[in-house]
Length: 481
Image (cartoon, rainbow, N blue to C red; front, side):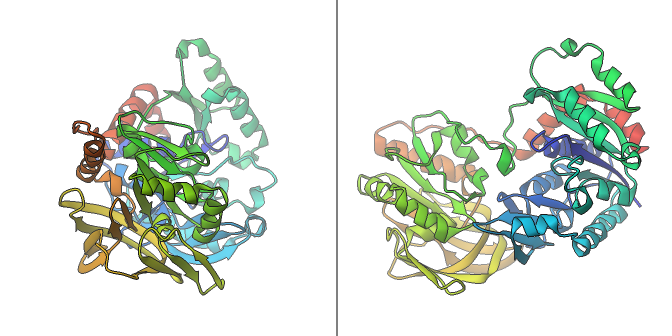
């Protein structure tokens, strides 16, 4: 049976996911077999596991850091907020739809048992499991129904490291307040804490971190500096007002229920990309992204005036791109037999979509000849089947699904418009370079090479800084490994 250590936060957004990732990578570097785990995550930024199931993006990245295949057992419960409820994904598959209040107030005892079974399976197969908590363990109004923080730590008797975001201010109070609200048996599990996202000179902290640690009979493991990185983020961490730089302008429609927004990270590294919610669309490229609630967001798109703006942009020659739900919206109609709703699309592409109860979740590999023949790797997560209503050029020829050889066509191209179900499209850097250079050619500009990015290199770079600034030897002692 392997060892375990848990990373909990003094609040949401303190950087638990990246600290967990760095610890996974650190122990891999020590030659150990490692796996991440988070019993329950809430995110619209999901990924596809090795089993072909849906899991949170943060555990997917942590699995990559651990040199192992991302598995739904690393994130047994994924909560995806919808318009008036949340979709519960259990072990990669749709399990239920519930109102947030009903779910939060339920005991979730059956779900807890499933998560513990998954954790114990990972412990049996690995030398160490790095467990991530959610939010804060000191939410006293929710603690008796919490299945992601101290209840998990106590179930496997593992030490806990608290992470506090010092950039926000009040970091000492965050740690002290958390310790004051924990029960005695919970306090005994706290091995120490880390200050995260520090900007400036750590010597300004003097010896007060050690004093606080002594007060609560734990250790201070160090101060992690603020890091500018290109690692995919959770929903709550995205900077919606950020803007890229470059000679190609890209407007990404910020739908109310936008999902899998890390699709567009490579565009922010290589173009003047931004998220927009209103106003005129004058960019060279307009992107309709994925969404958890396609029909609701389509109504919003029409009511906001952006649907007409997209049509005007298409007529003036801008490239229009639809990804997943955005692809569906570019078609003529979206029909939902389950709810009985039908909505007219933007009718820019000759396709129609029928929403289905079952969700298609797959890792894909294929080819496109748009902007030059390239191999594309990505994934799809969607409800619904899209049919062509006229002869149209297909965007993608799929030849591999979840590691199995298979052939079919997908997506549509018409003039300066294309739509696809393929998430991760712009992470295929040859395609992205060809696409942006096609836009430059149309503008009379010279072609340029793009800044590509290796996720493993980003993970290693972050871990290097982690090992320099955090007392990893002391953490190894705590785990006794």
